[in-house]
Length: 159
Length: 173
Image (cartoon, rainbow over all chains, first blue to last red; front, top):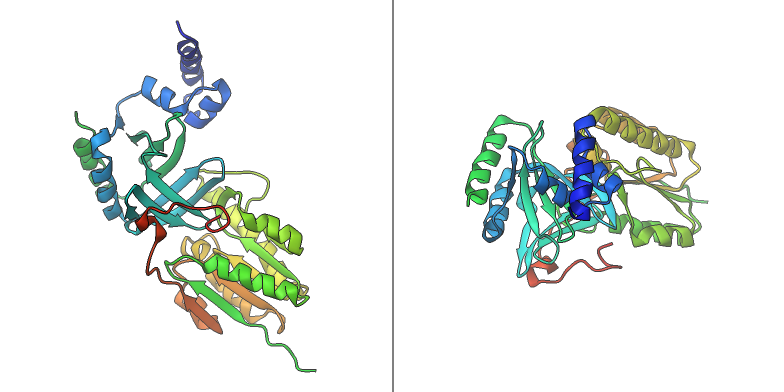
């Protein structure tokens, strides 16, 4: 059993004992990338976006209107309501201006995107190559938008 | 001596530069011996160049929820922290001790209902005559614009990312 597997086993135990614990807390506590935890404990409601569908997904989410965007990186931990239609496309990806921070979603930063739907609200989570969640789009809870989220999941995650 | 008339200034719109313009004003005011404070109404914590500049220029930037970072779904807690920031700002406006008070991104807090609009309007109306107040952020409420002496809308015409230019230290943060 590798070191990572041993750590994930401990994470699983911690999850069993503390069901509400956040992925971030677990990752910090056990020094395991959040992405590895999400992958290992993937349950119904967690779906990985196909790498060839990322651009199309970003085109889609521009139509999702106002939602919260959370940024977690070495510079900022910030949460703001943004209108996703303000996403601008460039030669390398997409960017969105937030107060004091510009979110840049491109291949250099974002390796994997997951649809995550556990207890509301649903979210779209963006992970870097080190398995760290760097952006999250946290959805409004209105039923029509959640339906669109689920439809997008079918479209962009199906193998 | 001519009495100074404090202005209410609103920087709004979807384009960049609302907080940056307020910081430019802060720099000018400090250079003229005025006392300045900037209170930020954004949830979270971030490292940007203006904190270092503010230390050098000797004016205060106070982030909301100072002392911890928080990304939570707890609206009650969000409102409480925004309220604390507002109480801090309100006291500084009313004290008359500051010449320029910048309420950074307060339009966002008002839009989200974290801070009571009527209370902000009252504080603006009842402030000491010499105090300038700047309110920044997208989606300024019509009542806030009505209360302003100067309102500016930032509009994006071009964005560097469209040409592949990424965020740069010293310009974007």
